[in-house]
Amino acid sequence: MLSQQNKYFLGGPIKMKRKLLGLSLALMLIFSFGFFACKDESKPQTATAYGMLHMQYAGQATVTAIRQGSNYKIQSVEIKEYMPLNLIGEMTFTQPEGEEEEVTYSIHGTEFTEEDINLDDFVLNGNKYYAKRIKVGDEIFTYTKFEAMSGEDTDVFAYQNGKYSDLTNYALYPKKTMTGKGLTIKNAYENPEFAKWYIEKMTAGDYHIVKSATDEEGEDETYDVAFTSRAGSTTTKQNWADKAQNGYWPSNENSLGWKDNIEKMENAIKTYGLEVYTGEETKGDDGFMLGTNSTGATLTDYHQYMALAKTAYEAAKQKITDAEKAAKQKITDAEKK
Image (cartoon, rainbow, N blue to C red):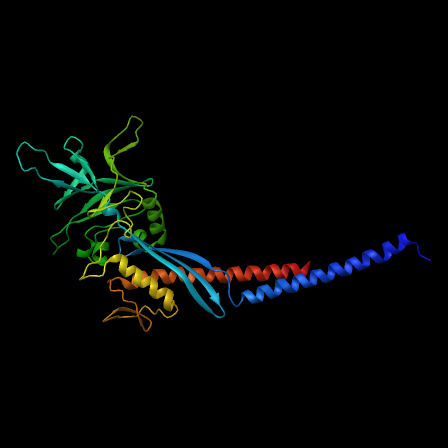
């Protein structure tokens, strides 16, 4: 006859193992059910895409999407756009009315006198001055003149950099002509990394107008410009380049401005999704179409904004797929143990 102690060691642990095994199977079934249930609706994923819009402007689109059954629903979308390099170094001036009065200069809300400004640091182009050198992050961009080609009567000015480049007066010259002038435009306008880098520096306020002189340590000296004004609107240096924050193209009774155009596109994307976007939509009486639905948006470069949003959307979908694969792999690994 077995002692109570032997009964404990022979019966207790076996029963406990059975209970633990049953509990493990139950938990696995619950976990598996949770995974397959999530196949009907995934966790939302967010992705951001960057790119250059109408050649000079840095664009950013952020999309949050969730999978519902075999379809995807866009929960939120934000499209942003930032002013180009060539406007950073722009300086206006006011001629004095009297002979004894001085010329006053203004750089995006900061006033300078003749004593404050060294005109050797600037180039006169039309009725405005442009800084010869600007600094974005650690990169120096130099204002460079390209002579007019045969049959053209206007020179092209560009901020050039060994790594990146930018163009001014681009509307006067198609891309092919610009390339003929030897401008390095591929990095700036075909590489999303430039847009991402540029937006990060602009929103951090990390950009400056550089003087010809250097300090005692040989570092570049810069003009103290607050960048508090853009086209008559008050802003901050971190928001100066952001079209949504700097008063760019306001709406009026005759025109739908930039912010309202973007809002209409964002609302249409959330309502109709981007699976229906073909890239071939035309502009109807009530604005551009998204699939067979009118968005109400009227701005010329509609398809560039939509294409950027579609890129972010596809990236969000890929994140959803990757997350589901990772969850499934966890189940497979747990079953092997």
